[in-house]
Length: 365
Image (tube, rainbow, N blue to C red; front, top):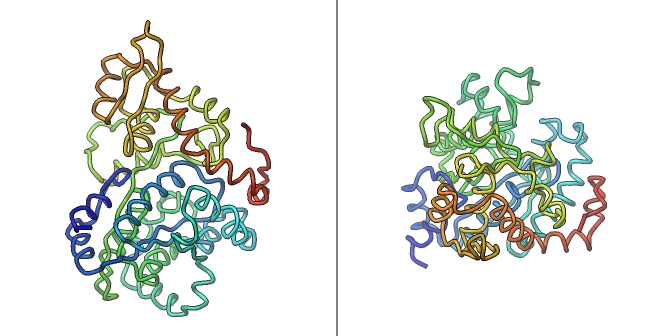
């Protein structure tokens, strides 16, 4: 595969930003199989914003010849107080439910490496020295700005360990010796830190940031007055505010949700007629369906009959013109997501022990 094709794969949706494309090109020129990683705090159930988007993007990286790692960041979840700060529980769920959520989506262990952070640190004690080196080269103000990667705000009453968290995440990138660091746009600040410090560690990294799917609840991702388009801090902060969140179950579609749950949630979703900006159903169609196939809208002849939507531009144009009713769009997106997530539902139906770790034992059909 030629380098241009590999770059195109890396830039496909849901990719929103590449820092930098020149770095990415150099990496593909120098590495036949660049190492790629994405890290996750071990927290609650995996939704389509984290699980499905990750699967789609990793599939692109694998096609481009990359070697991918999913980093199960247990110490990070511990610092951030997940599962009540119970490290044993975090580790059990990390290597149980959380890992198997991605396996259920097609990322089997023969395709992707799964590494638990704490076990990896035991084999590499130099990690802690690297973490200290990063803190020595970073101001307190810069580190404080980076705590937003934890889903926290700079003005919160944070524990002292939270100030070390961003340095640990940057050190993870250097420890794993990856060339491509991948995450959602909400992790951008720490990736910028790692990108700047990489030469001191004699590393070359490219940071690739994915689009943050909005929650079902709305309001949408409308730019505030004076906010520029592009990856400005203000725009990213807006995206974080409305992103899909596992802490709001009815705002999120989980990878193992049953068909009835998917239908119920989407039917209740924010999807105003003729409005595309900030419309989560439009975004799910664009980022999860139209990236790989057309979207068929099924409807009676008296309402215009069936139509085949081939790309995002066509979808947006006919929706703004009022030629596509919200309920018809919702029905199509429900059908497609139910089909895409079928393997995950079936996997967890056979492996209820992993759902039981989260006290979730029933998948509604």
